[in-house]
Each structure stands twice: as structure tokens, then as C-alpha cells.
Image (cartoon, rainbow, N blue to C red):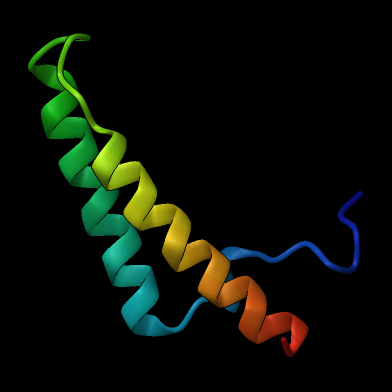
Length: 60
């Protein structure tokens, strides 16, 4: 069961959803190159978007 402070994909704005989807696709393309390819920069970008949406939802 989800906690009240959890957020869902529907909590993102349209722009944030599009950016998350594009970042996930870029991570996939880089991942196909092999396990030695670094995707940490794309993960950090996605985490920043998630944190922004969480702050907006929680009103902080």
C-alpha cells in the first residue's frame, strides 16, 4: 500500500513526464553499448526532476 507522502507518475507535470521518458530512452540507448558505459549523469537528472515534483506535491 502506498504511503500518503509517496508520489506517482501522475504527480509530474507534462513537461516533467516528457523529460523523464526521454532520459529513460537515452539511458536505454547508452545501456545497449555495454555495462561499462556511464549513465550516472542521466540518473542524476532524473532524480532532480523527481525531487522537484516531490517538493511541489508536499508544498515545500
